[in-house]
Structures are given as structure tokens and as C-alpha cells.
Length: 276
Image 1 (cartoon, rainbow, N blue to C red):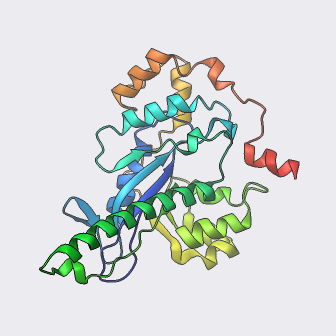
Image 2: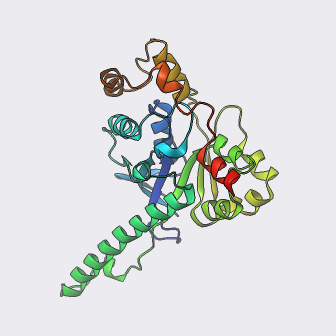
Image 3: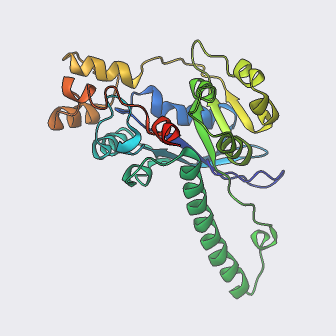
């Protein structure tokens, strides 16, 4: 999410979300609007409050080299995510992470998207200031101080649990992800994010930058369950968009063979750790 965090200023918040496995079950894209509407009340075409205005959601599929079991080609995952979001006017799929030759750490992905957001913001500010200078009549906008955008990582409560997995995360990366960027955490059944935060000395220190969002309408359908059903020839009608179902059938994306891909392999971050 992009945000301006100064009081009484418009806040712009791009919301970043991973999309590793696919297909995008209806609950996964819903996490973005859930977080957008939960803490921020709607006002006009965008949502705003005293601190933030959510202006964009970014879905970032992981690279093929991540090495997760059953991970299909990024080409298919990006295409399916775009189909699932084709009716959204504020969530977009960004293929940059998926196009990298090697797996990219989450913190580096956040840095990339923040730098892109900052460049866009600075370009708009330059154009805005140029027009204000050329205008013979000043307006209220020219008197406002610009507020820099922020980027926050949207995740489920189970994501916080992974911070406790040995050798999966570098402590300095957690500090930057949570401390510099921040998390918007959606509640999941069986997970207590507040307890996870309190059990971690590091997360407790950074909890001011972790925004907890309650999922009022719970949807426990997972991408893993969808893939399993597809491999068994079961119907997933109404669980994922029809356009995604058609794409999966056309390209034969999920099969027993695809589910065995990367079987027995360590995830790339764990492989890198063992090589050190």
C-alpha cells in the first residue's frame, strides 16, 4: 500500500501482496479490499481516514526459482492473477518479481515497489509544481506540502508465524519489512496475530507498524485445496472466477505431474542458508 502518514494530510497507500502458488482463490484477492475497507472508511472513489488513503493494491507473484512444491510456471500464475483481477479498478498484478532469474527476498521486492512508487510520485509532483508556477493564480493545492507515499505488506496471520521458522528469515530483513514498511495483517481462523506479536521480542518492539484487520466474512478456501480439487477432476465452479477456470482447462495447468514439481526440494531461502 502507498500512504502519506502525516496528520491532516492526504495519505496514499499502496498495498503489496504476494501471489505465490495460484490459482487465485476468491478469498485471496478479497484480502486487499478487506484491508482497504476495514480500517479506512470509504470517501469517494478511494478510501481514506485521518492517516492513510489506499490508492493501489499490488499482487506480486513469486519467481519460479522459489522452489515450492507444486509451483507452476510464473507465466501461468501471472496470467491467472490478471484474469482474477480484471474487474478491479485498484488492484494490479506486477510481474517484476516473477521475471527475476533467481528468487528475490521479500525485502528487496518491497524496496523495488517503493522506489517505483516514489518515482511516480516525484514525477507527478514535478508536473504539479510546474503547472502551479506557470499559473498566474495560486490555488490551495500549491500551498499544501507533499506527503511521501508509503508501502505496506499485506499478509495473513499465518505469515507472522513464518518469522519463527528457523533460518527462513534474516533478522535485519524482518526489521526493515516491519519497521520501515509495515504490515497489514488479515486475521485467519486458528491464528491469533496479537499473541504471535507478543511472543516475539522483535515484533513487540515494532507492533506500532503492524495493522491488524479482522476478517468479518471468513473464507477458508485455499489455493492448495483448489489445486487438489483440479487434479482430481472436481469442479471448482464459484470458488475461482470462470475466466480462470477456462484458462486452467485450456492450458492444462494443474495436473498430478505439476503437483510433484519441486517435490523433496528445500525452499530457495533455506537452500541459500545451508550453503552459507
